[in-house]
Structures are given as C-alpha cells and as structure tokens.
Image (cartoon, rainbow, N blue to C red):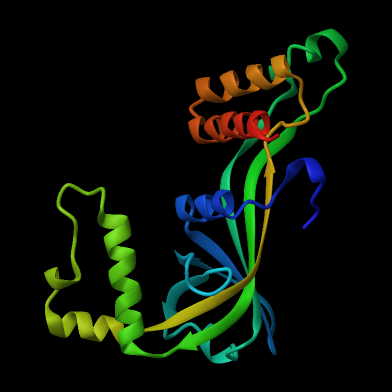
Length: 214
C-alpha cells in the first residue's frame, strides 16, 4: 500500500477501532488457482497472540477452504469511513482555482497466516459471537437457541471456520490532514450537510489526535 507519512496510521487502538466498526473484510489469498478475494464478516480477538487474530467462517461449498493450506500467508483488507471530496468545498479554491477532486478514506491491511478450522465447536463459537455482537442493538436479539436444534446443526454443518493470526497491521487514514484549517473545516461541514457524518467525525478525530500529539 502506498503510504505517505502524513496519512500513515500505526496506533493499534485506532486500527482495531476501524476493524470493529467495519467488520466486513476482504480476505485476499493466493492459491494454485491464482489470486482470490472473499468478503467475510470478521471478529477481532485483540488479546489473542502478539498482534491478535481474526476469525470468520465460509460456506462449505466455497472452494476457498480446500485451496488454502494452514500457515499460508493472507491479507485481510478493511475499509472504514470514505467519501468523495469536492474542491468546491475549499474556500481557497475560489481564490486560486488550484485544487482538484480527491477521496478521503480509512483503510486497514491485516497481514497474517491462516488456519482452516473444520471444527463444529469452533464454528458454533464463531456464529454465537457474531450473533451476540450484531444482535446486541436489536430490541429483541435473535439467539441461536431460537432456532430448532436439528435445523441449527444442519446449518452449522454447512460452514467451515477460518482463523487468521495477525502478523502485522498497516493503516492509512487520508483525512485532509494536508489542508489548512479553513479548508478542513469547510470540508467537514460539507460532509455533514450531505449526511456523511462518519467520515466527518473521523476527520475531526484526526485533527484532535494531531493536536494532542506532543
């Protein structure tokens, strides 16, 4: 990943926060059939191992799990807040006209090694954790016990677990850090008016963090 120093993000708590807010990761693999990418909701175990681990599951019908070998290197890409930035939002553009459109975004690359877990107990645990996490905000959360036991067992038999031991996290937060204060503030305001509140909030955090850094 092209990583200018101004946009580089290495703090684990920031990168892990992006992963948790945007858990749908793109698992990039290289097998005998070539490059492949699968989009999976991941869970982060930050305390598991020196850099944490990611867990997920795939359909048994997906050839990915048979093409992967345990210990193979993989890359999981997580995209955070993102959005188009118009030069018309910069007050300085109307004075100099020396600006062009761009795109602001957050992205995390999780490098690691994969283990295939064709283990019903592991798979059950992954599904239970995914359910608890994503049903938590529902007024009446769905639970695995809501489903008939025989149906649930049949469904679990159709998926296979994936575990990625993270060896390195690499982050990039391109959030208008290269703009002066008035252009920055105007961009945040324009995003908020257009409903892009998450990206606007990420930009505000980036400026606060920069101000707090000694």
